[in-house]
Length: 113
Length: 115
Image (cartoon, rainbow over all chains, first blue to last red; front, side, top):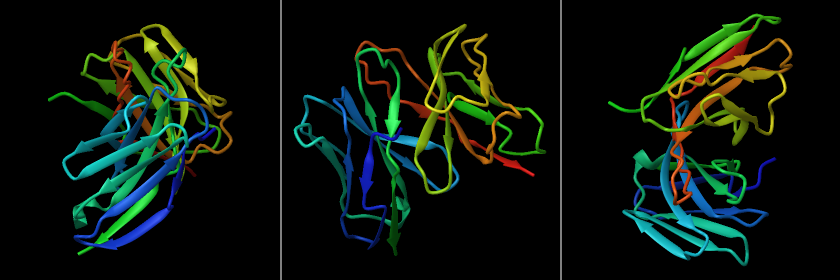
């Protein structure tokens, strides 16, 4: 079953604008990760945030985590046409679920030049 | 050049045939995974293996089988029992690290079409 639900399902913006994607999940987590997928390709890991962290930055990426609301957001600042891709959140439950990630449905981001 | 390779990139199968998808990694990772992705959907876990000669069913294992005889290799067989096998199949691997981050590294995928 899919733990993560992402919102919006699709997002279309102009180059230079910021893009925000949200992810909600249902059960407690050890960490939450964001991945990017270009059309027809494999996924690439972007950033990981642990359950005891609230915010993390990596270049133009900013991730927040609110464990009380069981939600996370990914912000891409100053977007570029090359950021066009699908973005997935994935949760790691910890405990005995070693290695298992549960992926959301994804947000399709289109950045127009 | 380290990474994960999957072959073939495209695979066509007739109904009733078994097919095997290859996944090889040279990252020295202990854990490997197989996912299925349908159009416009997220990834669903088929099987995963934390160590050689051991593997566990994921959420949608019916109609699939795997083996893990070598650390580098985790082939997936799509059997004739899988009723709707047309999909994009992704293999991934991760370290078994103390930090329990379980960041996964993905191959380029195999697109399977049943004719």
